[in-house]
Image (cartoon, rainbow over all chains, first blue to last red; front, side, top):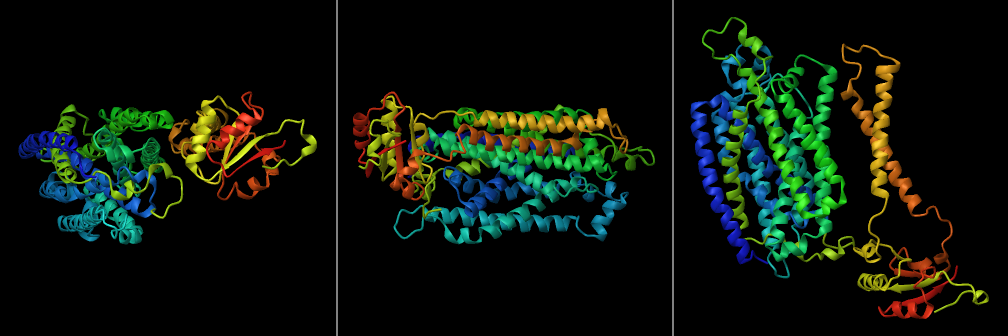
Length: 424
Length: 186
């Protein structure tokens, strides 16, 4: 049941590739963050949200599978559990965000906050914003995610022991999985709001947390579809478990999450566009001018329309190489989506700190645009490679000496997917 | 083996019905029948059997394209009705927004897409299955009537098939150790 020789050496090759990627990417990011923190840190945050989100999506789907069961989870269960555990090393990469908050969040930068009544109200009167609270909520979130992820992971490893007494699936987790799901949604929503939405503290949107979280779930589906397909040719267990009909199910779920992402993203636009209020509209103004309108159009076409139409076809979902291509497209577009959500907020720093700024210039700055530039995209990609190397290394280190398929999936023969069994 | 209506011996039967006890047996029987050239056959089971439809040579059907067309038609209708009302038939300035305020039209467009797709999925499926069908000769078989919705796996080779031959077909079904084989009258 354990990983075969060929697979282990393939995993080692990926790890050997990931280490220099992490070193060079994070090293250059650190250098640039020192030289131009205002440009580098938002790019770093974007990439962090992508890779952290992948782990968060893995955690949410692990808990979801404990809650609802289903054959879609059999091929990807171990892959999801492993991804969730990577949240633990990701704590280290959160530290730069905490330290560099002054360049990321207007509520942490007195030059912007001091002149803005609404930010001061939310920070000093309501007491939601602020460094101590930001750190406290992050610590609470990471604590919860790490505990749940490790619990799921080690329980599942225990269930891999082939002795008669060990259960095929971890029962206690299943019993409280409903509560865990609610916890994951609650804390995940806070992460999205704290880490990215408060970059524009005047803005409000009640669907934002769900929108970001569903995007992370979509990432997790795309990633595990790619990885399980890759493993099919390297692990006999995966070949047994990842049947065409189960990959079809995963393709359908990826389609469902693509729709959910589009649904929440569009709902937010519709509500804000209809109301047309001055607290809300600038968020979209920043994201539909200065080149960002092309990014938004690309997202509508390549994050929604194209994957949606491709995934409608049964043939695409049942042919691994097509399904993997759609998954890669969705991952790439989701990075672009997070860039679109994150970077335009830099506009609030327009003119801030300029030596001879005219009177009233800072106040007016919130309506200005931070134009799309390939340099920002390059910075995002640099941080993406750095954090990604770190993430992939951690992931492969965890996966290397463990079975890539959980035992309950192997004791549950694929041919009887639709028959009632005691197992699920 | 029972023959319910000896008076109509000369009339050809509806087909031969075999009951199997395992999914493996009915899968093997269906595969064999298909490979021998039988096309008019049907299987009956209380639970979905993975691969059974494929074993009988059922590949693609028209439901998916129908659903797509239903969704497309519904969506276009939904959008057109709103566009026509707001832009052509009763233009009205609402908060300075353009007459063709397409984001506001999306929810209804989406709903009508779902309505069109779901309607054609349901009614298209029923029509393609030839339903509703108040009478099916298989209902005459007491064993089938009692067990097809509980725990039986039934395979029926229909007499309309050019390959159908009472003796040869019976021998084919018997190869896979059925619990029973019955001739079903029309």
